[in-house]
Image 1 (cartoon, rainbow, N blue to C red):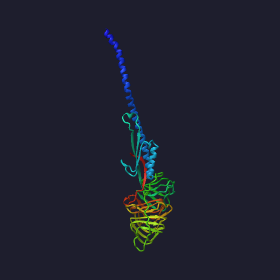
Image 2: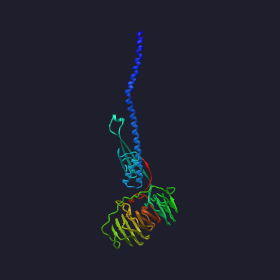
Image 3: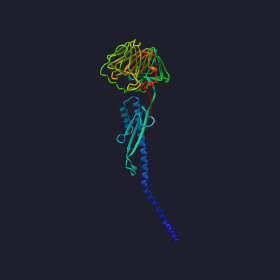
Length: 412
């Protein structure tokens, strides 16, 4: 009995001893438990910072692509991406930014895309017991803008009323290419008089005024409030100006590339040899009985030079298909905004290439276009009243595509 009482007397001490052991074990384990909790919180924080950084990269890539679509210079695109990233949680003090256009990796390595790479350095908290170095967070985002087709006519003026004016008793057909105006005016594109225009789409940053027959083969209605199209030749340099002035020469002798001062007037049959012709002042005039041809030619107009082609002239010009001035038939000095260029020609005339006058007006009154419809008109403003057919399948002519921009999306 005494041994039984002794055993029972010891039981409470054993019980107390077990509780003490649990308490001791719990106390010893508590820092580890707290550490794991802290690690969980810290990991969740890193995930939060990564999502925040990803959002900043997405916004930066999207807005930079909008700037790219609008034709802004590369320096401004890079600056916009950095500013937008900073405004949305990324800090240059803790990380880096890299902006690539076109992207250097992925499925969108093209001129319509911008890639933004962001990094952020975060100091460790609980995980310092494993590593004292900071945590490096890296994210990537790519945005792309889609094309809504190509244009054959593009007016670059941002404010002009009737920047593209298609008027008169004419019938014009655009196959696979559109009419585009970058003007914000309510009537940035105007179709009127007795004209008949057929095109896939007519697009304007501002509005479209239709007072005659407009047939759209792709769009249900004219597209207003569209994003602006980018001048595809905006980086084209001016050609070097030869020191001496050349003369046209008499008879049927061919005309050589060079600098022609004070104007050129042609009344007979002439062939222009391939190359760049600098028309320095005066008027390049083709009279009614002129018959001219030239393959691989570019005419650069400067010092107030103008074009005046008579409707009776027989014209067969084509631009170079390679080199610096590939696809450029006429090029107006972009530092001179006041000239008005007048092109007329009969139905058998061809001018294959781009009529490029980024700061000047182009008036087209003749019934002509390029071979197979391959002619572009890119000017400050366009006044068109001819009968012709334009086409977009013209890569062989060397012309750059006039891209009509569409929507922007984050794609990677």
